[in-house]
Length: 340
Image 1 (cartoon, rainbow, N blue to C red):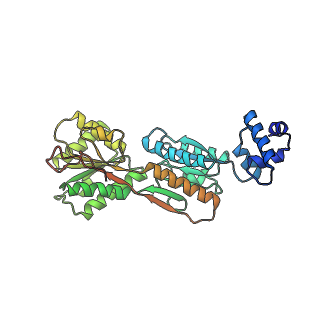
Image 2: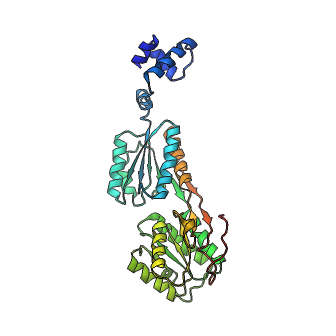
Image 3: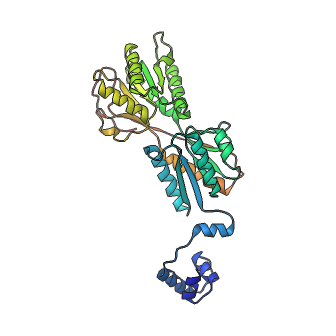
């Protein structure tokens, strides 16, 4: 700014007023300052500006479970875009399924004086937040709540999405439906399992004396365990399977590819890359990952602006996308239907 002031023949204060769009500077002075800025390649340092005011570092942190997955990639893109529009820098880090690493990331971002944090890992417990999140750092949880709902949270409609999948299959005529989910340590995995069981009970799907939870398998995604689960379901007359996330969907698809024969109807929770070009194309419950990211960053900036607001919870709807993997029993190739 000193160089700009010298080149424009004016004071640093006047340059600052021009840069910040303040009134009271003569047009010809504004023109000289802007010309000097262009010639010198001056760039405004928003972070330094916030620091001088003592209010902000113009940065927020995002702690994720996985930087590579399509869900978290979409979340990150929405958060980064919204932060950039507000003049904020986004810092991101991946916990890679390690709660201790997640805690260290929370601590590291807080030490860098970020204005707020978005925290997404499923395996992070409240004890990690309590131990590592300073009370004066605003935070929003994505994809899982805090135990006492004392922190702003943005959740996907897990139970509603699973209910839509089960109702779709039941509407197709399936009466014996199984559920394959991921590690039960994940809050989302437990929520989707519970949604599956509740919807089956609500629809009064017959079990012929079988306990309903015998149609549920969590965490059996290695080939041997999955083969045992599918063999048992086939013996019990299962004609359709709901998978609780992309990992479970891919595991089941690999199993069905390696074991040709009658295929159960299949609905997967979460949109899968290339789902529409599989054979048959996969019916999915699509989450609005971008909507989750946008809602979370909006809550965070509202919290930054008004720390005294009560904790809030936002549930983002899912959408059932019907393709050809979920036909009625005995119908191998029903017509393709539009997404709904």
